[in-house]
Image (tube, rainbow, N blue to C red; front, side, top):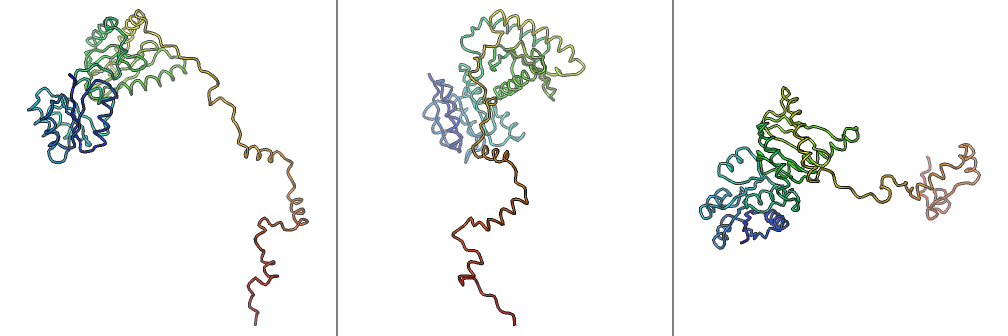
Length: 341
C-alpha cells in the first residue's frame, strides 16, 4: 500500500515545489495538498495520512493546532513542520509539540527528502551507498566503526566514499534533519583539500578539526577514495589531540585494509580528456583588434609634418550635408550681427 503524504501550506508555490521534489525519488507516494488547516482536516477525513508536512503559520488554524487534531485521528502519523522563521522560541515550541523534523524556508530539498524517507521507513535514496554493494561486504567496516565510536565515546562515526555515499556508519547525528547538507558540505571541503594537498605534494593525508560548543568533529581521508569523520565531545581538545590523531591513524590502516579486501579502496579511473582544454587554446584576436595592432606597427608620422600636410590639403568636411558658418554667411543664411553705434 503506498504511503500518503499531505502538504499543508497557504503558499502554493512552496507546496508544489515540495510535491515535485517528492515525485523525483520515485517511491510510489500519494501526495495531496491543502492551503489551510480546515481543508487539510477535510482531506484527512477522506483518506488516511502517513506523513503530514505542514507550515507553522497558516491562515486560521495554526500548524501546531492542525498537528494536534490530526494526531488524534492518526496516532502513528509522522509530522514535518516547515516555517519561515527560525527563532529559538519557535523551535522550542515545535520540539515540545513532538514534530519528527523541522525545516526553515527555503527548505533544503536534500535534507527534506532524506527526512521523508527516514520518517516513512522507505528505501534510502539520498546520498546512500550504491545498491549493488552487498550488506555483508560492509559488515566488517561497520564493526570497525562501532569499535571506533566506543573508544572515543563519540556520538557518530561515518565512512563515505569520494561521491559522498555512506559506506558504513555507527551512531546517529545530533541533528538528523541536516544530514544531507552536512555530508555535502564536508565532501566539498574534502575534495578541495585533496587538490590543495596534492599541489603541496602531500596528497595522501590531511586532517580537519572543528572545535564547537556542543559537538566536535574530526575529518580525515582514508586512502584516496574514502573519508572518515567522527562527531563527539572533546575530540578537538588540544590537550588530547595527539592521542586522538594516533588512534585515528591506526583505525584508518584497518579500515583501508578492509576496503582493499573488498576491492573498493581506489578511485575509479577518470576518462582521458579529449583535445586541448579551453583555457589552453590559442587566443583568437577579433578583427577590429587585429586592425588596430597593424596600425600601431606602422611608421609613425612626425607631428609637425602632419599639420603641414593638413594645411596644404585644406579643411576636410566629414559631414557634407552640413554647412560651415562661412558657407551659411555667403548664402545669406547666417544671422546678421548688430552694427556698433
